[in-house]
Length: 234
Image (tube, rainbow, N blue to C red; front, side, top):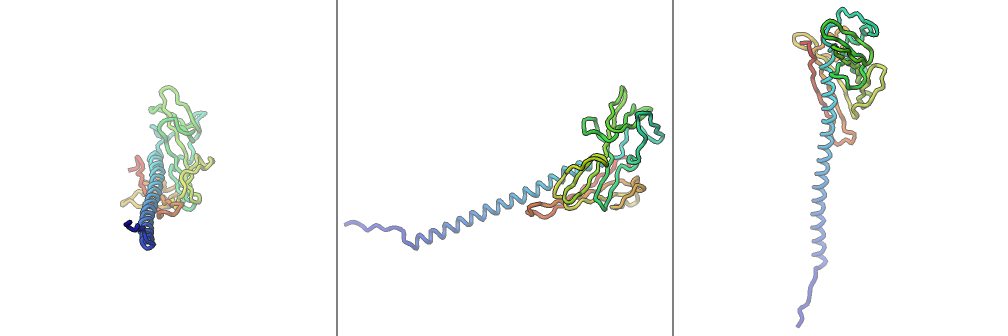
């Protein structure tokens, strides 16, 4: 006598489908949460890396402001084709809080960078001469290239241009705020965001604040701060 064969009933199939659906939804939720966490962390890391690059660049340039070669220029007399001392070199750091514009006159080490705004050529013993643009030093002389850099927050773009007549180049996007304050000489040291040509000589340190935003809205706005102490002013 043959035994009757039995398969899965409708109820058993429905229960199996529901269990499979629950497991699948759980896996999808775990995958979605993991992917969201990865995207958030990646966006935050990208913002941090961008801020670190720009702030480290600014700190290096700030620490080189006002370094005009190895000799003083208190009794400077230009010898053609050297040029007269420009007023811009009297104030190597200027900040326009209204227009969010930071102007720096900074020195570079070496002559392999972009074309300088000015070049000081000196024998570091008796004479120094200032030239417009690039200048090749002679025998026994050293060239000190200097660049005037203008950083401006335009919309959400931080731009930089070489000299006051140059073309602004985008440096960093998605910047929601750019602030600069100055540690002024005194006891105690006090910070202010208002600086003039007359008070620029009292600057001892510069605090820069950058606030970046995620264009995709995955993370909150992140603020990054750095303080640069100026050389030879303490």
